[in-house]
Length: 349
Image (cartoon, rainbow, N blue to C red; front, side):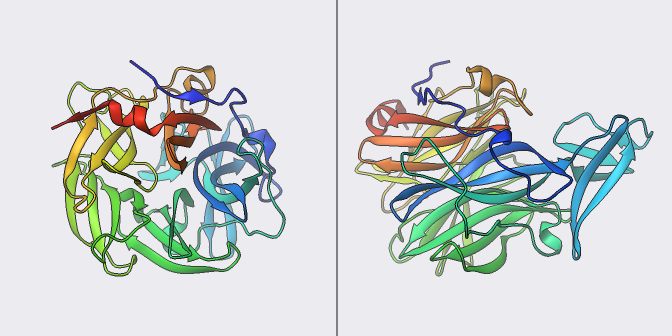
């Protein structure tokens, strides 16, 4: 399949060993899927950091958030009620648990390539009963000097969309779960259209329907309604199993350009694009038939969960689009694209 990404020669730009665990007794297993924004003249990444207890031979241990902190659950590897077929999720006595606990961590850079963790900024961690398995994959949208952080809230209740807002990245207002389970991949447009907020999101169905991209409207960026399915999976294509939004759509003269991820039945994740009408984003005008980026480098093919390129953050500057992405569910990488080139690959309906 074709690939028009110009990857950073420095990739991966961040690996698990580059950051320290949030507390003693835990180890960082993966760095994933950063939200991206500019602030104070720097490029910032809000990285999903996945941690677990240091593992002991013959024992599977994993963390869960409780009111009084993190509880470590340890189970014998050969326990008859334990299913470890997926490295991301285990099933124990009929209940699902994540093998890692994720929080969101800020890093910044003067050149967009070399990142460091600045002092004085908090870790964003799960709070409350809807985030006991952590928070993941944050998208960041800037609207009227306020940053909107939409992220995946994970617990035994399911997977939904949480929201926090900030102006300075030190004080945050929590808005709870704005879209209930099962839902994720929520990206808010960085501009109101005809006086309304818009967002892309991805409900999931285990029976009827599928893993499709939907559009929602809001009067205030917090309360969402008028949901409409706008992009579906395509049988026998690279995005046949699931599709989901990346970061906030990019405004172009041709329309709202959205970079999205798609996966096939083998769980291979690629990136594509579609275009929405400027005045009515519920109208999808065009879509790429082939992906614009496929996992092909060693750090994309091999890792915690291989054959994955996944983005929910970018910096757009004229024709240059810098996409930061998670590779193989373990590393953070970067790649450059031409907006005009992406637009040229679209097939209009």
